[in-house]
Structure formats: C-alpha cells, structure tokens
Image (cartoon, rainbow, N blue to C red; front, side, top):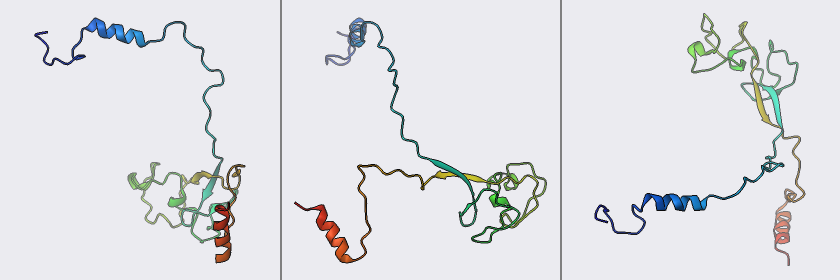
Length: 155
C-alpha cells in the first residue's frame, strides 16, 4: 500500500483481480449463430443518370446532339464545361493530357477528348407515397387555410 499514490478503492488494484473481473463479463458457452435474415436494408432511393446542361441544368434527352446548343438556354453543348474531364483545379483545367489550353470553357470547341458529363440524381417521378403519410392540399383562399387548421384540432 506504500507504493500507491491515492488511497481510493479501485486505483491500481491488483492485476489478477482486474483480469478476473474482465473474464466474468465475457459470455460463456458456444457462440450464437449469425442471424440468417441479416440486418434490415435501408430503403434505396431511385436514381436517374442523365446529361444536364452546364448552364441551366435542364435534363437533356437521350440521343441529344452535343454539337448543337441547349434547347432551353441556347448554350453550347460541345464545350469544356459540359465535358466529363473538365476540372478547374487541374492543369489546363482538364484531366486529360492536352497540349494547348482552351481559353473560353463555355464556348464550343473541337476537342477530340470530349465526353458528355452525366449526373446522378433522385428520380422524383417514381416517389411512392406511404399510407401513413398525410396528404396535403394547398389552400386556395384564406378560408381554406383556416378550415384546414380547424380540422387539425377537431374534437
């Protein structure tokens, strides 16, 4: 007891007492079998892979001619900002080895390494409604809003 700095119980107890206490906490007997069903999987959100205009974010239909312009904002589609290799922090702002820097990244060019940039987004059209989710109706007049509020607290 003379080598202990503090006199509280539990401080620097004997090592065998601690190891015996740890062994008592371990479950004895054979290991339990792994649950066959496994963990519950999260509900996956449906995704859509589509090309979008760099300027207005309009979804471009499949088979779009990228030598032309965007149907909505008329921005050039065969430009560096629409390319999958465009990276502002890379050398010459391109991930591919190009020899000459292209000055304007949003103007049409004739780069042979051009690949369309595609994005992955949530599919808003295939959203399933839960039977427990309340359906909301947007009120058209202040009286409709007041009636909807009163319906919440009916007795």
